[in-house]
Amino acid sequence: MAGGGELKLLGTWASPWACRVRIAMHLKALSYDYVEEDLDNKSDLLLTSNPVHKKVPVLIHNGKPISESLVIVQYIDEAFASNGRSLLPSDPQERAIARFWAAYIDDKITASWKQAFSAKTEEERLEGTKQLLVAVETLEGALRVCSKGKPFFGGDSVGYLDVVLGGLLPWLQGTEALCGVEFLDAARTPLLSAWAERFGALDAAKAVLPDVGRLVEFAKVRREQQAAAAAAAKN
Amino acid sequence: MAGKEDLKLLGLPLSPFVVSVRMALNMKGVSYEYVDEDLNNKSELLLKSNPVHKKVPVLIHNGKPICESLVILQYVDELFAGRSILPTDPYERATARFWAAFAGDKLFPAWYGVVTAQAEEERAEKVKETLAAIEHMEVAFAKCSGGNAFFGGDSIGYVDVVLGSFLFWFEAVRRVDGLEIINASKTPLLAAWAERFGGSVEAKEAVPVTKADLAVQYISKFRAPAAAAAKLASSE
Image (tube, each protein chain N blue to C red):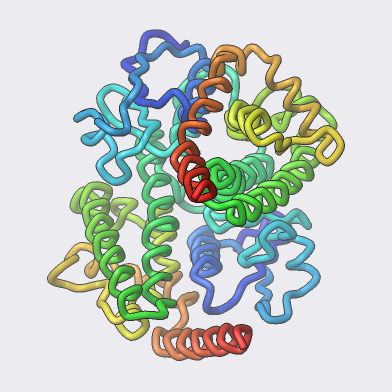
């Protein structure tokens, strides 16, 4: 296992953004110190390493912090270019396409997912799921274009976009239980459904991704706690 | 050697994101065809090139579209030789990407919210958010510049281009609202940087002085209906 310096990752088991980074680290065969943060009691290290957002994941490389999962994944790919395969494509046009869809996933997919998940009214939830389904269909199209018939967004092997979406996999699989609509439906999005199976079977995914059942329970409890806190704050 | 490439940029006169791409293309010395879009009547080419977002900027290179300004900036940097826009060191690149994302995700919605806020309360909230965000960028400047003139060091780089493309809007907000987003006493480093950036060849080429005037007109026009309604309500 190659190191190339001291690597420490601050994350939480449930965070899909932290999962992305952990999957990337695994694919690049990088060893690192993992620190499980308590988001209700953030460590000094987290607060000083990411003073702007105070969020996980944060990668600390030789004492220097890097925040924002997409920034971290690209950093790992560039700083450890000689480790294993490149995550980003080598062709600038393909790189631009991968970055475009990564931004789409973080802007559109997560926004509509969150709306459906946190909806206070049925109307809100329906609006969220409607937008989510449109976004998923768009993503199915992206997979068709990017993969060109091969198993992953990255082609024959796992690439940047696979990692970006893959970190979210257990959350996507829990969408029916949490938002009331199936994200991955074999009839509606056959390519994405097949991709999800393949991605989930990877060593990196099995080592990092949390169990869907455990995640769903955790998310439900968290949602109830936040709703209760909001109600209490109103009184 | 950047010669004649088949490059077309779809844009809008007031979009800071379009300005940033134009700046980058100019920095690379690459010539391109520029097309102003009409938001109320988007061209077939725009709709076909950016079906997902239907927004500008879109850079069409040899017939293939690239969308999202930060994606385009990195594409231009990677494809064309000449001066580097992003740093070469991986850690510095990560830092630059972080702050470019911050400028787009946090700072932009805040200041644009000041422009478009419908009610005074909303505007006050957006002003607060804007000033908080710009404080972070003041700290960012100290970190990134390492005592040099720009975020990119000796010369203009990625974060300079991204933040610099907002400046004509900041000037417009100053003229209309009297609000100094970059303030000589609160954000001295950014104030000095803004002077230097504004005086640069790169800025002058991509941001003619008339842009701030146009932005002022936009703000006045945008707020006119609400102002008229308020006037009507208060005269009853």
